[in-house]
Length: 629
Image (cartoon, rainbow, N blue to C red):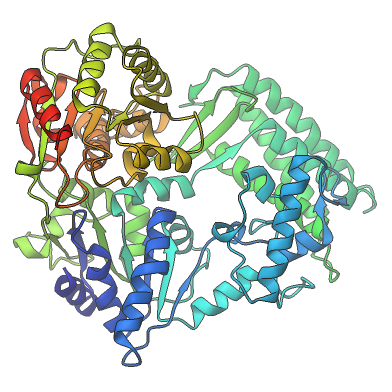
């Protein structure tokens, strides 16, 4: 892998490397990155991997190399990931834009703790990063941080010289290796907003997540409350400007029109906005544009309330301008109100491969790596989603490698240190009925209880919905009371994971965050249960739009979108079982379609090559043997 990465960096060709758990994947790209003469950016999807790189892998490499190479490195995140000293020392603007002190109650105590921590960080030249802060909620963190629109800028801010975010950028500009995240990379390379110092090579780890993260970074949302808050914040700052205060009133009136339009709109995808919604979006857009103009040019004196108010109005304008444009390259939908969360319009790009091809792949060498890049047995599906064409693959003699505008790429599967055929079993419960819309049936629940009983706990349950996870947990608690059964939501995920690891006779049932983010080697996890193939919901606006677009283009939308989505998640979920060369166990898939449906072969070809069976008796005997050691 290291040789292939070094070769790609030298040649400028793109590279896809599938490297399973335990291969030393991070060293496989960090070593050539340090040897490379140019600056290298490493982008990860999860904080866990970022921590592993910065706190373990890179320091060990730096120690090993000594003074022989430029081993300078830095971590770079979005501005809201750093504490803001201006907000901490001057206060937080309220709805009228007036700076106020900390709130009362338990929230106030948490804010005080964060303030004290940030001041210590400033004194000690610390990073001020959120990951190093005392425990807190999202709401509390917003009391001590700002986003890029709310920031005064280093030149205007009284505390610019001490700013954690600015210091991080300065350090990155002086470093050979920059560790960042997919979202920041997307904003920098694809949206064209300069966030990262100039670089020549990119390594994207957890690359199976990239298209989702790029889509997320390019998704905008808007609620009536967003418009109302922007109008209220702006009122104070534009009222005395020759009657311009009416612009804030106009935006407030437009918010009322938007509220009426959303109330008359059904949740889900909006292919063609009705006249009422279209008019309301245009009203909000025009009022926001006028209000931005009413602010005039930035004043010399720094005013945090004014800067934040203008930023909020600019955000409303940019979002409504995009939503009102009705481009075929965007998908618009309405999320219905639930659990105190108001109804929100959302807009996302239909596809991101073209943006990635043009913004990221056209002038930099990019190395994509993950444990899951081969779907259905080859790299083409994932490569296509990233903006690379199968006809441009250089190591297969593909026809378009030398064509004008081609982006040549190579691929490598470095294998795995695990003997999957001996260490793991994939059990497909072919005798069960296909899963229905009403959640788990009695047959599935009986199967789960029997499997967990045979494994004597030690079970990670990966479910398609929170309701299914809770139903299964309740049934196992009732029928197997001697085991401890935890369900996602019972406590914070780190606490649940800790309990799961400490006691082998424990089960942990949950949804999506457990499919990808959990690493539990050893006898803690000897049975992974997957209740159904994780196809996207039929009413998912973006996925259904992408599926229809693929069909219209002459492709197979189901296989290109739904089956690909399911294959990625299945591979990640199955990957929870075998984490070391000593691990053994069973993955039980309770969805018979994996064995009976035509697409089952594609899904199975995307999974590790474990021994496969549909015999429940064989599996229970195997689980009992493994549990007994």
